Image 1 (spheres, one colour):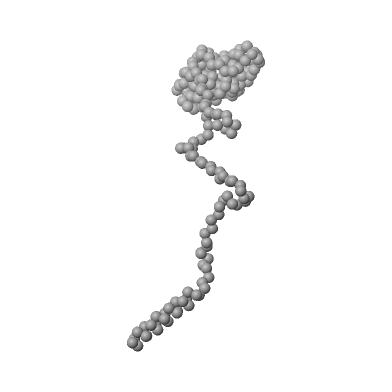
Image 2 (tube, helix red, strand yellow):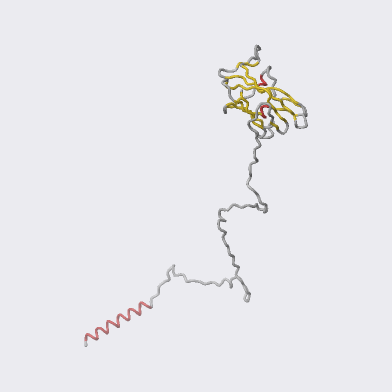
Length: 224
């Protein structure tokens, strides 16, 4: 009997402690934030207004992230720049002609010399292993107006890939074509003079049309 009474007293004590613990207050934690649900149709709208949400649908185009535009902002189509084709006539020889915007040139003769202006104080001897190659050039003015033919800006030359420079204008023996004033429809004949290897080869002369036509007029290959 005493045992039963003891158990009853213990149970009453435990129950009382539990009730006191339930009455205590606990401050809410910072993380205990109540969820708030907002109806977007209530914000900033008068009562009774019907608001329909705007839906934007974006449909990606396959490959659109790498495809380059083919139109500018003014909706004008454009094409990539395509280089103009070159109209070079190569392999020309003596007697052949190349025509530019202002002049037509024709090499008519090629000569070899060991020196220029021999017997004068201006005499120039070719250096060892080289010879002087003189090319007689006929130049016709086809521009319809008086014009100056400038060899330094119209012609480039090479032998076996090595550039050679015209220096006829430095001599008295060879009438140079450089800086030749030619009247409309007129003709002038003069020389180009190069120092080239004496063992022979091919003198490659490129005519670019008095500097106006690019390298599209003609390439002469003259053996000496």
